[in-house]
Every structure is written in structure tokens, then in C-alpha cells.
Length: 396
Image 1: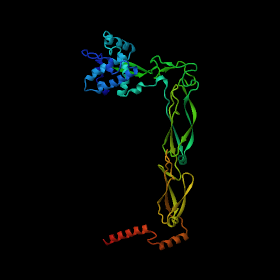
Image 2 (image 1 turned 60 degrees about the vertical axis):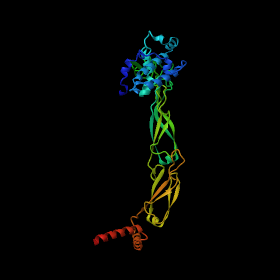
Image 3 (image 1 turned 60 degrees about the horizontal axis):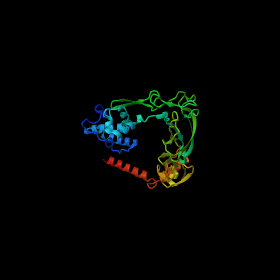
Image 4 (image 1 turned 135 degrees about the vertical axis):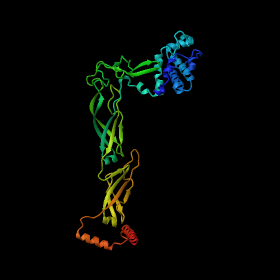
């Protein structure tokens, strides 16, 4: 990786500070008191190592020296025996054993793993599945509800097959009367580390697949997985105002974890079925109502259903044209997790009569003869403009 260019060269020189440079007190190097505890030492080391790391200061050559000095100081002070020797004899305690940073470098590389996590985002691999407790998978369940159910909300019952904790072994995966034991290959860590110069390579333990535990006598009921498949019945609370595509999360109701690990989550995805009368747009409801030509001309009232199961009367003014909309405030859908409510919009469509009787035709003809520009202003205005336009074209 490009962000690690130069590590090999630096590692080749990490055998201590420059020979001609006087050694400073290790406590002074780490900027801590002599009474500092292990946690304080580690915190100071991480902070200073990140600050003076050569890759973070490529133009400052002195950072390499400071970085080596910090590394050497922490290598000595983090070890109780080495620290005790240093507190009693100072740097002289290690003059015949070589530089502290060179002595036991594999342990130093291990200590640097946390620094690499912060610098390069490698923490996910290190913080693996310790103790064999793998989290269970998340589950998805698709549910369709009606628009009325979305309006009122409901409590729905869900039945689904899923993995649950094995009762025979209580999720441990081991046969009753036995227990899992630490993996002898990785010592229970789930990861195997191998130091190569400045780097520490880490990989999943092949013996336990990263669980950190092995089972000599697996449970016969679950074959050592700690879980079995069962059909479960769950109660799901659907709040009023949910929309199509709303996702409801039920924490811990997914698959059981492997060998007693935490369960995953269950996600309910809601789909709202089509309604024969209403069309929903957000919190508003829309509907189309056909009315007769006579009602549109003379005016009157119509009764329309509302989503809550009741009815509302809508006044249609005299001379209403097809396509006109009327608003019923607060008769729409509730807004999820609020006290607001949408509106209901009614669009009237004037229906043209069909299959007229002889008498009806006579009456309509008579109505047409008696009609004037006042009774049909839009038609009169339109055809007047057409006539004017055709007259201009003829004269030209």
C-alpha cells in the first residue's frame, strides 16, 4: 500500500536511538510521571506514536529518531520486570543486552497493532469474534397492510422460521456437562499473529475459524452451533401513519448468535395495498367523484366516504366545472410520530349522459336553443375566437 512506503527502511534502523545521542529518561520521553500506571503509559504511547509517526511527517527526518525513542521507552516501561530494572539501574540495566527496542521486537510490533488500527483503519480485523460469540444474522420480513390499517395502526402477528438458541446446551454448542475450551492454536484469541520486521501480520486462526474456542464434544441437538431452527410467533406494533416502504426494526429478534452470541435484528418492510377509492400522496388523500351534469349546473351536495370509516358532505356550487377540487382539512392520513394530519382532496368529474331517450334528447335540444353566452361562457368565448380567427384568414 502506498501509505506504508518507507516502513522497511525505518524498521531496519529501529535498533535504538542514534549512537551519538544521549539517552533521555524514558518517563520524560513518554511525558508521564514515574508513578504512571499501565493504562496511562499505553495512552501516552499511542498519542505520541501517532503524532511522531514518520508517515505523518514525511518532510521531517527528525521524526524517525523521535519515533524510535518513543518505541524504545514504551518497550521497556510496559514490561513490569524491565521497568523495575530500569527504575533501579537506569539505562545501564540494558547496556549489555542491546537496545530495548531491538530486544523482543515482536512484542513491540504487537503493541503497535492498536496504532495501526488508528492510522490505517485495520481495527475490524483485530477486533474479531473473540470467545466464539458470533452475532446472528439479521432477518427481513415483507408485510402488506391495507390503507385503513396504515391509518389506524395495528398489532400484527408474524410467524417465521428462524434460528433460536439451543435449549439442550444453552447456546454453548457443547454437549451437556461439557464446556468449550480455548483454542490451543491461537490461545483463545481467534487470530494468529506473525511478526516480520516492522510489520505484524495477522490472520484468522484456521483451527477455530476465528472463534477462539473449540468443542471436543458437540451438542447432538445443534451439532455444536448452539442454535436450532424453529418457527417463532412475534407481535409487531405498526404505528398509525406508516407509508409504503416503512421499515420497522425489532432488535434482537433475528437469528440467534452462534454459540451463545447476540441475536441479530428482524426488519419488517411494509407495503400498503392499493385502495379502491383513495390515492395517497404523503399524508394527503385524493379521490375522484363523478357527478351528473345537472348537479354540476344547478349545484347541490354530495356525500363521500372518509378513511376513518365515516362520511362527509361536500357542497358543490352552481356551475361547477369538471376537474374542480374540494379540500376537506384534516381528513387525510396521520403523520408518523406526530400529531399532524393530512388533508383529503376531492376532484369532481362531470359525467356526460349516455343512451338518451327520445324525450331526453328533445329536452337537451330545447336547452341548447335556449342557451346563451351567459350559460356557457367558456364555449362561447372559445368559438368566438375561432370565428374571429377564421374571418381574418378569409379576408387575407
